Image (tube, rainbow, N blue to C red):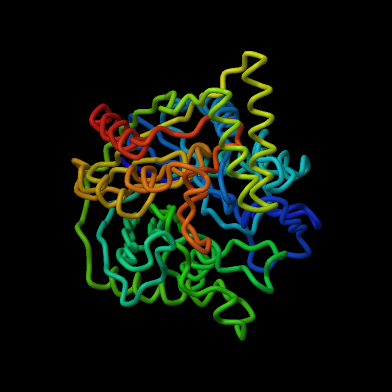
Amino acid sequence: MFKIGCGEKKLEIPQFAELYGYGMFAGRRNTHTLGDLYCRAFSFNDGEKRAMIIYTDICTTDDIYAREMRIRIATEYSIHPDYITFTATHTHSAPALFYKGFCGSGIPDPGFQQHWKDTVMEVAKQAFYNEEEIAYAEAGKCTLSQKLGTNRIDPEKDSTDGTIRWARFIRPDGSCKVLLHSHGVHGIVMNGPFYKIASSDWGGAANQLIQDEKLADMPLFLLGPCGDINARYTARDIPEEKNPHFYTAKLYIADLKKGIASGGEKLTDLTIRSAMETVRVPVKKQTVEELAKDAADFRAINEYEAERANRIDEMIAQIKKGDDLTVLHDFQALRIGKLSFLFIPGEYFVEEGAKLMSRSAADYPFAVTVANGNGMYFPSEKIMKEYPDPNSKKPGGGFGFYEVHCYPVRHRYRYADNISDFVADKLIELEQKAK
């Protein structure tokens, strides 16, 4: 018998806590909250194996905190650690949640960090103890009636995610307990005049509409690959909106409802399998001299980019001390019958994500970003080679440069050019292990 349990709790956002997103030293001290932010837990039990997904309306989940909380949950509820997942909506209007690093990108609020940990354990307990029977699942996908995003790196081609992927988990009485939905657009709707207001952004607003319109008791949003995709409609574009995050969410939910109404495939085999591996990702192990050149290039761009140079100076000091600046990230593939979830510990590009899902052996693959940690951007090899140096930024500015050269803020080496292929290969390998 397949069962699902759910738990949720609204997060309390401290006034004046710094919000994470939109760059370094933005000084975004939260004034108030517009649109509740939640932490939710989902327990999936096939009678033999149990998996748990912890979802938070936050920009990213820190690797260290995910590992810490994974062990706590595994110990408390006898769930194998490889079957526990942490996901985020990638809203850029929530407090920073990270253990260390990211100098200038929002000072972590100790009270909020502890509040999140306590909340995770509370919702995990709720989910574990309220599991109930699910008769079957239904899965499908639908096409957006209009673009919700724009490609900031290649605006001429403008490749975006045109699909909503979804799965419904249905009780014996025909009601929907959980509606899982996935699409890739950055959570940056709440910019402009809403710059210093905490918000769950469009992903959280979509979840609220699912509950308001009784499409399911509990929504689960999984962010698709969108490392290069900005929201088409933001507070700057629709200033008359009192709650601009609902503007995009309403367009999205209208298409999701049409997709569900047209039907999906009924799934009765909901066997759970998972595979996880902690991996040292490939990097370009720069010499002190190469790093110093990057620092000089950053300083030559402008005063803002000089902050990256300051971080490189710190990296050089670490290297001279003998520190290891390579990084470990957790990769995971979770399968529930014909559903496959490929969890990416960072931001993945939209076309690379589409290729990854096309390689999946599952009938219904979901590539899920900013899960189980924060590896920042995993750009395509094309973009990595197009911007080999900090001073290779596009004439007149623009995007496509910092995704490759954001490495100093984490005090780590730049990724190897093949990082995107490495991520995909590792996830497909794990998916095979999870068969």
